[in-house]
Amino acid sequence: MLKRRIERRPAAAVLTGCPSHLHPVMARLYAARGVRDAAELELGLGRLQPAHSLAGLEAATTVLVEAVEQRQRILVIGDFDADGATSTAVAIRALRAMGAAHVDFLVPDRFRFGYGLTPAIVEVAAGRRPDLLVTVDNGISSVAGVAAARAHGMRVLITDHHLPGAELPDADAVVNPNQHGCAFPSKSLAGVGVIFYVLTALRARLRAAGWFTAQGIEEPNLAHYLDLVALGTVADVATLDANNRVLVAQGLARIRAGRACAGLNALLRIAGRDGARLSAMDLGFVLGPRLNAAGRLDDMSLGIRCLLADTLDDALPLARELDRLNVERRAIEAEMQSEAAGELERMQLSGALPFGLCLFEPHWHEGVIGLLASRVKERVHRPVVVFTRAENGELKGSARSVSGLHVRDALEAIATREPDLLVRFGGHAMAAGLTLRDGELERFRRAFDEEVRRHLDVRDLDGALMTDGSLAPEDAELELAEQIRAGGPWGQGFPEPRFDDVFEIAQQRIVGERHLKMRLRWPGEARTVDAIAFNRAPSANPQVRTVYRLDVNEYRGERTLQFVVDYMEPCSGSAE
Image (cartoon, rainbow, N blue to C red; front, side, top):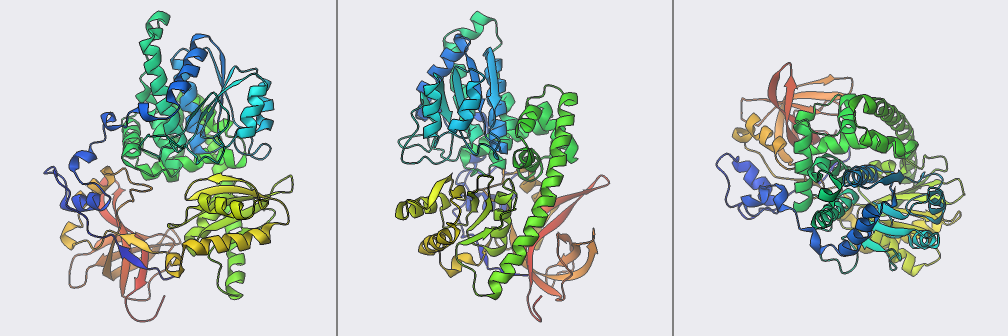
């Protein structure tokens, strides 16, 4: 196993105003994540940032009010990932609940049309004769697509969260917290968060106009859609700043209380998960992949229809098909990972890996290259771009980055120096997509490695594991594990607590064919604790340094403390 550098988060200011029931270790964990006052741990909806500072919001709600009042045909243009699917479902459900008479959706087939509001997808949309196009989780770079829509006489409202380029599309309204001049303080909203905010503003405008009373419509409670907002936010790996933590916490509360929509409940049933004990991590690693599978291998319309289903009976067949696609996706990904591992081995035998790594196989599945880029990045601890060949002969790439390199900005820097190299690109700090012409891969490899070297050095590539330090034996109790599980929500930018300590291995055995079950004890202590390390062989060394998380193991109605070991290395003796 590759040896990792273990770093501990620096000591932080003391958390003030702690309630008496809060474990002292929890206070330390929160403080290390930037929480200074326990009042910040209150995650009620009243702590959400107000919508009024979102640039473009007034124009957006004006467009939507006219569309609703005049019974115009509204077509929501979604995206083919979980954020796009939940954004679309929230938009459709809320607009219909507010009295919009004609609302439908269209999601581009990623293999035929690519990402966003392209001129080609506008031609498809025109066949439905909409009056208004509303993009969710896309559109900020769709300059040509918006021009095509306006040429067809359609109005366009863009809601997005991706970083804008030098030119904004000429839409009727643009709402994006990351557009230049937007004062909204939470720049980490996912696409589903952006459309949720727009819809809350629309409801306020319609309420002020007396719309609901005049139409005899019960004013919708938009909190009913927070289960979908939470799912899209976590699945898109959005940074869990204070605002997103409120959205996710409130959505999780609805799910745990049994008030999730039928489609989400169907996904939970198919996955064999108890909604009452769902965590934010489950949204990202259990539900998100099943929803994403439709967009990766087939058509995300399947996932959206599941989220729009009104009953469990309607949703379950769709959820089963999503699960089947996810099984197929895992098989495809496993084969691609095996091929990538072989390529990495060949590259390492011929010399050191580049700082910015590019991999290419013409037959790799276009819908899975982003996942492969993430897996390879986790293995080699450096920015990775995985390419495949599209049907039109171009090379489609998916990039994943590490701390210290804003990959979308890196691509923009390359495009500035070599304007003819990238056909198109877009994305975030940690993930981006790009397209190259055939024959330009080697040129891009050189440019990408050079750009990465401008920002990172060797120490940045050693895959440091950040921990919350040591955990005293007396603190390693079920009560703390329960508080950690109930705390958070944990995720991107607000990481789940991990500790590092030296342990003696009292017992070890393989379970489930490839997982290591252990009993660990602190040196000099008699007490042992259950631990499990997934996909790990037995240790040849009796004493190991570990990075671990506290978990609650539930078996036959009994709840016990368990360590989940993410990393272990020998303290002495032969290397493993």
